[in-house]
Length: 318
Image 1 (cartoon, rainbow, N blue to C red):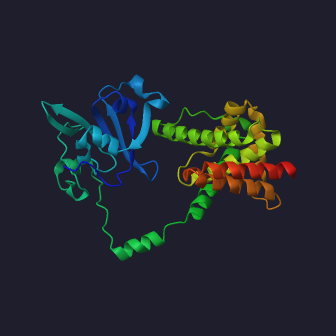
Image 2 (cartoon, rainbow, N blue to C red; image 1 turned 135 degrees about the horizontal axis):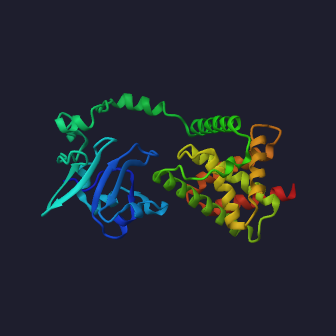
Image 3 (cartoon, one colour; image 1 turned 180 degrees about the vertical axis):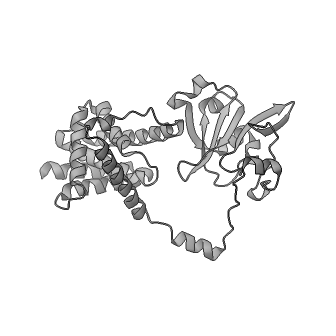
């Protein structure tokens, strides 16, 4: 039996499964949220509806952690999106069953071992098509045709513009920024929590560089940096435009108790000026924010702090 699978990605799992030594009970596979997400989701036999409702009940981890808890999971890993299994352990006879029919799942520890010709597989995955095998030359061509980071960012910003136009057409009420997250799934809430942590980490780096409360001018610069950071992040992990604006508004309130209306006005000003070449300051600040996304994931906090200080000093003097 394979005990691990190289580059298997991440998964969403309940905290009870990780932290309370529970046993796997449910395993299902959804469409991945981001490239590193395998799509697999896991619940333990100790989970209840009450325990899985709060946002913090789920966590995204490397799926190898689940392999360590139950090595048999490597036998279902290659099953496609739509898989919905339960785990059984009767007197040491461990196996997975289909959740609807309770038929035993045939394990496939390699992709080529998937039982695609079995009646059970065809019943549960009627539209499954085995991915085509490509040659080395075809693979090279495919990689060469992948979009660049700049193209991905441009596409994300284009999507943003479309969303904003749609919102403006449907309502002119400024409270659109204050949309709640009640419509988000558990997975979406996890992604939102990750974004909140990144933004909070970034602002804490800035706080150490500031050493005092930010002036109104500082707040304006910081708002633009966060807009740039989240715009670059959106190319890899999409979040709705209104959700990103909420993150910025809320972080200023949480960290500095700054009125939400003031930050909303800053955001609106950036949006009015971001595509206008006459406003070079706003364009530069947003570019620095995009660069800070790269520095954050390079764990170069010192570079972030240094560039932040230089940027503030520049705009304080100008």
